[in-house]
Image (cartoon, rainbow, N blue to C red):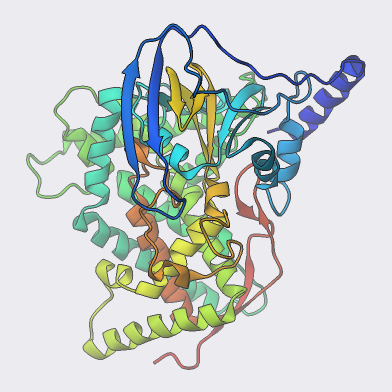
Length: 511
């Protein structure tokens, strides 16, 4: 979002609409033609077992039990956007939601970014929305993002094609073959980076930048088998221009960020299409294991996966290499730096397996990293507190009733995950970094959805955990460090303000 432009808009609106009185009203619809009625049996918030019954009825009017969520549209034109942004830039971005949740309940209406929006901070409601198929809810994103992604993006398509692509990706990402490959690549790139850090005693290491470089290389290798070099450097440069447009103003004219981002994507697509042609010409029939995601998609026999669709989606799937995985790594280092006792316990666990592998003369394999229980709890707690994905947008395709709330057809719905993850009714001392809370807590409950859910659940969630585990293992077994003061920025995307600078020193107790 372009803040100067918003400020100019505020000045204009205030100057022309200052005399308008504040209007607050509750929209009610008494003439609904078709209502999809979803009744969720209520359980205590801590329960992990939910009973959901779904029935579709046709009625002439809304039942007395279903109401539109309470709330306010805020100022004319602006709505509540400015307060939302102001809170988002603060240390507690969920304060916007908390204030309205106290007034209106866990599901309420607002008006942000030019749209009336129904916001859910309810774990059960969020779970139902995310688990629903395209008959009830479909993705809804800003215009600039949809233009950049394209109509064939897996983030936007629905129905059988989306399920087919998601299924192909999910199976490949979960395969032991890919996990072994990612482990080898991640170990190699991490070791190369840390060899440089050994000699870097006069300046800090910026974890966020280093993690982005490593994760991007690993992901691109898994997607299109491109190794580090000139083409990778060019791709990275173009990709940086591409992602800069994801939150830009939706104006596609020469000189605008959206225009530059679209041009960058065209260049990236050319490179991917060249790789597709090369792979197709050299494809080995019935190869034992695919080497990358492109191999998986090229082997599909449905005829639905065109070159345009495959190349567009390769670019879109590079985003986690720039965003999700590096931030998971960076935030883990941030929280560990602030929690010496937790860092000590994590280090002891990793040093123990590190020494054992040295004695046996064996390398660490992917299952070793994922079998470190406290390390996994640290990663889970980082995902809960860090909220890399703060919320997900959906659009209602029918009138839907959930837990007594009516969501009208066409409504924009924001499932705000951060409020759930920091809900004191679900988590004791929610703002305290406490990995041990996961020792007896179910990570598959509706109160923990860091990667979304349902048919659009991130297929690479296991790989994200694996990459973070590998980085943490090698970092804590090789270095001690001191972190400079830094803070987390939550808007428009989650990131460290200074890039998480740390001063590293080689361990003396390294065997």
